[in-house]
Amino acid sequence: MRNFFTILGGMGTIATESLARQLNHRIKITKDQDYLNYVLVNDAQVPDRTAYIKDHSKPNFFINLREDVLQQAQLGPDFFIMPCNTAHYFYDDLAGLTDVPFLHMMRIAVHRFVEEYPNEQKIGVIATEGSIYDHLYVDEITAVGRQAELGGPEIQPMVTELIYTNIKQKGVVDAELYHSILRKMHDEYGCNVILLGCTELSLAQEKAPDHPYKVIDPQSIIADVAIELELKIRVGMDPKEAVKKYLY
Image 1 (cartoon, rainbow, N blue to C red):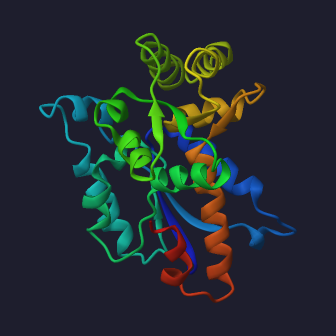
Image 2 (image 1 turned 180 degrees about the vertical axis):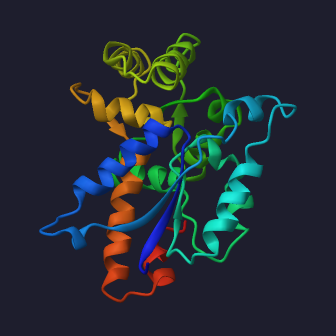
C-alpha cells in the first residue's frame, strides 16, 4: 500500500473508532478508491496513561507505544497521528524513534485556537487528570501567549466521571453531564472557548453536539489535517513537505 498514514490508537478504542468515522465520512467520495489509505493500530493493551503520569510505579505506557511506532515505521507511512492527548506526554521520545513525521495533535489544536479566536486570551481546558497533572495543555497554551483556565475543584471529578465511568467503562456518553461541564466552564469561569483535551471528550462532542458553546476539538482537527495532507500527498506532494506547516 502506498500513500498512507498510521494512526496510533486504542486509547481508548471507541474514541479511536470516532476518529475513523470522521476520516471516512468527511472525505468526498464517488467510489471506493476515493477513501484515504491508513493503518489503524488499535492497541487496546496500552496501559492507562494517567495512572503512570501520576505514579511512575504503574505500568509505563511508553513501552507499548514504542513497539507500535517501530513496527509501523518499517512500513513507511507518510506520517503518524496519535489520537490520545495524554499519551503526548511521551511525544518527543516517540517522535525521536523514527524519521517519519509525527504530528503533535495537542500543539496543532492550540495553534488552531489562536488562528480561529485571535482575540480570545483565555481558553478553558477539560482533560484527564494526567494531562492536567503534568500541565500538558497548560504548557502548550502558555507557549503561544494565552491563558489556560481549568475551572474550580468541582470540574475535574465531573470530567473524570464522563471520561472513565461513562465512556471508558460503560461505552456511553452522558450528554447531560457533558453539557453541564461546558456550561460551568462558560458561565462560572468565563471561558468563551473550551478545549476538549481528551479523545473521549471528542467522542462526547460527536455524540452530543447540541449545545451553544464553542469548543476546540483536537481529534476533529487532526482528522481534518490528516485528510488535507494525505490528499496532497496522493497527487504527488512530498510527505515531509506536506506536513511541514503543521510541525510547530
